[in-house]
Amino acid sequence: MDKVNIAEKLTQISEYWKPYIAGELNGQLVKLDKLKGEFVWHHHENEDEMFLVVKGRFRMEFRDPACVA
Image 1 (cartoon, rainbow, N blue to C red):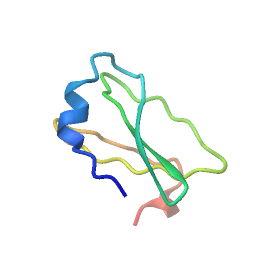
Image 2: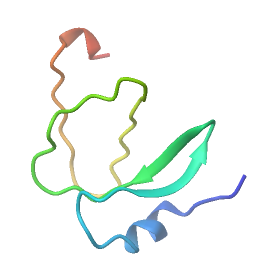
Image 3: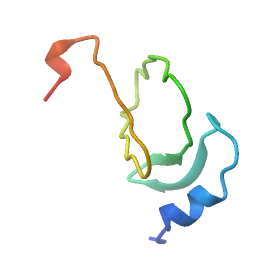
């Protein structure tokens, strides 16, 4: 398994809202993205999503209160 320096990879991304595939883990793509403004709600039927905020803030509101842990 190759290591990926997330901070280094993020410096290579200049456009917002254009995901960059940084690697793969357990059959899942690991994507990096720079976001700006409102994040539009959407749903992936066969995928899970994880959000790691490296700089700034990201607020997520769930439509289903049962989803909040």
